[in-house]
Image (cartoon, rainbow, N blue to C red; front, side, top):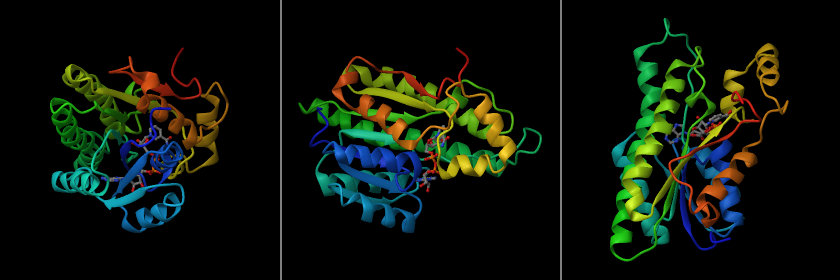
Length: 253
Ligand code: NAD
């Protein structure tokens, strides 16, 4: 694999899917900076990840421009480069359209969509400068969802944000293609993390979700890490602007 020796930033890397991606990257010899809002959770995750390789934790809120710039600066300071960005940080909020509060709409959009834009733009600017200076092109992976395609009425803000992430992925891919920088997204279905537990708190909801998933089971974070590894690696060298769905067949076939 061409990943050995590369440097990655994984946002929302203190838990769930982000942690699984960081872990997988480290096993492939990637130097990894995890960024997360949660300081204590991040420090705990780092203690485990450090056993696998060269890892750092930076406390950062991806919806805040200064935090994002600090994250990039600390990454360059620690590892001298960044080749891979995984824009994974995200939150969900359950509310029907008529009940959704403005502050909750803003909070979800700020993290999921604006955070992906701010971090993507800051890292892309760095990557473009590197290419113009004769360096190798990097790659960016955004975390979308099956909600980018499915209209889920009880998750309005989240659904809108993930539709935005998949579109942002396409426009970023077009803007950065002249530099050889590839931008793709992953669209997970139901994956066993704290986020899923928060929206599927009762057995009836879990049964409903399973009945709509042809493979008949919830996915594991490691099954999303596998897709991230493919997209980060040269194996996917002709893939850009895509959202790759890993959803147990949940999207209509
Ligand atoms: P999770 O809640 O387990 O982990 C998300 C992490 O992001 C947490 O550690 C959290 O502290 C961090 N975070 C939240 N807001 C942040 C911010 N503003 N700045 C930095 N870090 C922040 O969730 P997960 O299930 O691992 O989700 C990861 C990504 O995958 C999200 O973008 C989510 O929308 C997406 N996704 C998850 C599922 C699923 O079923 N679990 C399905 C589709 C898409």
